[in-house]
Length: 309
Image 1 (cartoon, helix red, strand yellow):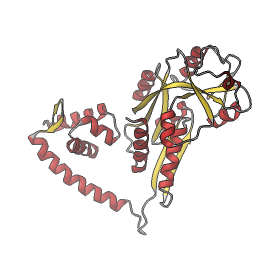
Image 2 (image 1 turned 45 degrees about the vertical axis):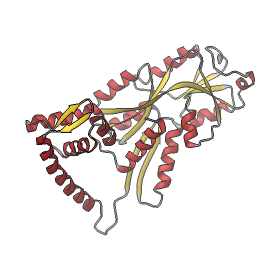
Image 3 (image 1 turned 30 degrees about the vertical axis):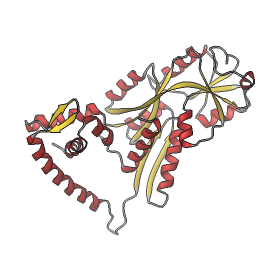
């Protein structure tokens, strides 16, 4: 028995649902079920009766939860004591996240940072390739990672996460689109969609992935667009700058709804793709043993609301 199991059982009881508890606890439903099942085996008692409508505590479960709640109240008081230094100053707020090249993620972080400007905070926010985001979480450099995968290899990425004891939580899927500068000659053609081969004379700008299956993205994108010539860049800011100087483009998610929610003015024109069924799946990851800080949980809540899930 461990403290997390008490917290998990209490949250399931409060919400009456394993799935809703998993969302508020920021863990996967399978991990939650596995933890509670392990606790029930240890106790040799069933804690919850699972029904189609949710979870109801057994008679033993109700008695167990009363004791668990008392224990958690004591633990919370001890945590409050530990969060204050000897001189009476609270420990700084903690936030550590590595994110892919996503405009909306940096915007959500900026708003979160603005909300805590007057507080003592230790905030770290990095924008990297998706391979680097995975490696940062795997190796403990960051508590939280936000990334996207193409729908054609999302399952392979999830298998990679599982092998490295990393939890994956999906946020949503968006169609792949093409971003070009407002001065791109393409805009003079009065088109509404990009067809395969239409951008044959322009350069496709991409960041370089180094870990499989993220390396598959380049192959999938190039095949879908007719094998264009690729120029590797460090980040999206560089891609935007180059697009303003030469005929070039890069792939983005068609997320006008999200940008509108954040009220972000776009410097690029984003076109949908014709007869291309590729989608980006967005999600966040953390190590199974990592407990997110309250600020990190706020960040995830904002992203979840943004995707409407």
